[in-house]
Image (cartoon, rainbow, N blue to C red; front, side, top):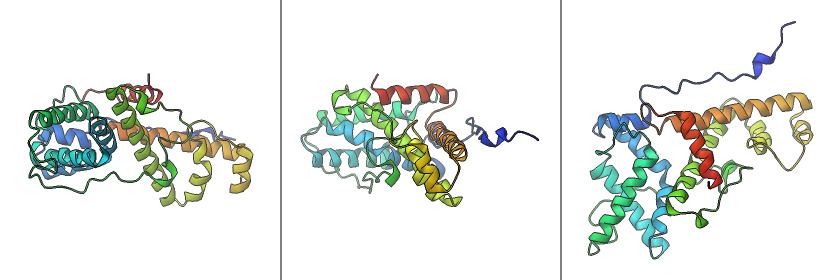
Length: 256
């Protein structure tokens, strides 16, 4: 009888896609409608790292939100990413540089109005994390407290958290589409490598054997890893290794 071990394998997606969200932006310099939509999606997705970076340099939370709104409004309406260099290739790196430039410009022009300076506002309030990803990161991962990190490291840590939250949300949606929403809810605590209760509890809840539950957890972990890699692939340019970016993500979460 043939082994069913192949059933545990998750096909590896092709991360060398021709037009990720970020490559759409940098290759078209933000002029096409596709690039504008890709840019809007990226900026909305990674609002939190920018907000927290600006908050560290603002007198209060309201001022930080105003400045964050203005930054993104300028990106979407006026600046785009015209200076993006495909050779540098990482959206997070370019975004951090753009925020620093914006804050420097604000300091140099302190007389400008803080509430937009005539730039129309977009609704870019940070979207809530999915219910399964509430908190600072995916469950079980030990992450550094950004309040104790240098500003750039804190930005990267929040970036990594946003990547994980988006990947987890995508995985949850896929599971629910497949009719496995309850299985996701029960097995989700094991995604990051552990949970505070035995797998036999999950097996009982799902009506599965313990061996079948272990297989289901393994498959879910593989899918989550694939979702994280897919999300990272959308934010790196040509020639940038997704594996390298994945290593940076885990380093950022550890605060190293």
